[in-house]
Amino acid sequence: MCRRLLRPLFAGLAAILLVAVPAYADDDDGFTLKDPRITESSGLAASRLHPGVYWTHNDSDDGAYLYAVDSRTGKTVATVTLTGVGTPRDVEAISIGPGNKIYVGDIGDNLGGTWDYVWIYELPEPKELKDQTVKATQYVVKYEDGARDAEALMVHPKTGRVYIADKKEEGGSLYEGPATLSASGTNVFKRVTAIDLWVTDGAFSPDGKRLAVRGYFGGILYDWNDGKIKRVQRLSVPLQGQGESMTYTTDGSKIMYGSEGEDTAVVARDAPGGGSGGSGSSSGSGGSGSAQEGDKEGTSSEFKIGVVALAGGVVVVWGLKRLLRRPTS
Image (tube, rainbow, N blue to C red; front, side, top):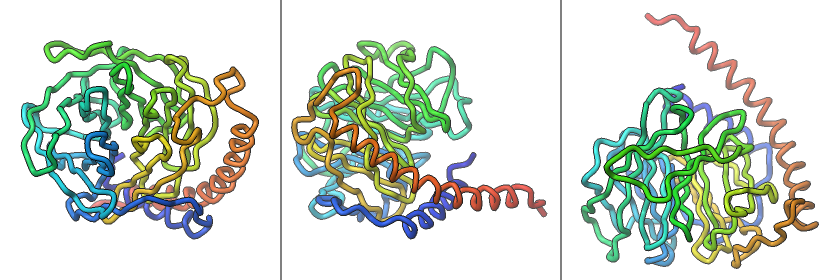
C-alpha cells in the first residue's frame, strides 16, 4: 500500500491512542527536529565523532542527503550530499559502524517486495560539521529467499557486520550480510532468525551485547548472544505519529525514538541495562526477575494500548476500504 496513503491513517490512529493513553514520565533529553526539510525522518544514528549530534534522513525520493542535527537545539548543523550512488528509491535506515563509517539502507520496498535488489551506501562520517559532498560506496543487496520490504538496518559496533530486519505485519526475520560487503558483486543476505515484531527500525547497544527493535506500537530487546538472540523484555516505545527510527545514545544509557512528520519529537527513554549496555542476565530465561516483571508490566500496558488501537484500527481500515471502493470519475 502506498506510504503516502498510509501516513494520514497512522496519524489518525496515533491521535486516538495519544488521547486514550497517558504519556510516560521519563521523556528526558529528547529534542525536536526543526528543519522544515526533514518531513519523513525514517532513520536515526548517534554520532560518536560529534557528541550530541544525530544523523537522520528522509525516506522515498527525497534524494541522497543526510542531515546532522544538534540535539541541544534541534537544528540541522550539516547537510551531506552523497555522490557515487544512483538515485535513491526508498531510504529507510542509517547506522554507524566501527571506524565511524556511516551505513545508509536504501532497503524499503513499498510495492511489497518487487525489486530484485536493494542498496546499501557506505561513507566516512565527516570530521567537520558543514554542508558538503561526500563520495559513498554503493553495495547491491539481495536476500537468499527473495525480495522483501525492510526498514531496519543495523551494523554491529564491534564486528562491522551488517544486518537487516524485514518488515512483516505478522513478524519478520533477521538477515545477516557477508562478513565483508563487496562493491563489485551482489551481497546475499541470509536469514538467521525470526523477529517477533512488525519492525520499523533497530539498533545495537554500543557494546554490541544487545539488539533493540521497534515497531509502530511496541518494541523488543534481545540479548545478542553472538547472533543467537534471546528475548529479554519488551521496550517502552513512545506513541508517535509514524514511529520509524531508533538509536542508542553513545553511552548506551538511553534509546532515542523518532517519527516521520514535520517538527517531530525524538523521544528519549532509559535503556534497560543503563549506561553499561551490558546483557544483565544472559540465561535462557531471558532476563532477571526485575526484567521479567518489567516485561509483564509492559505487556499489560501494551495490551491496553492494543485494545484501543484495535478499535481505532477497525475504524481506519473501514474508512480505507470505503475509500478504495469509491468509483473514480
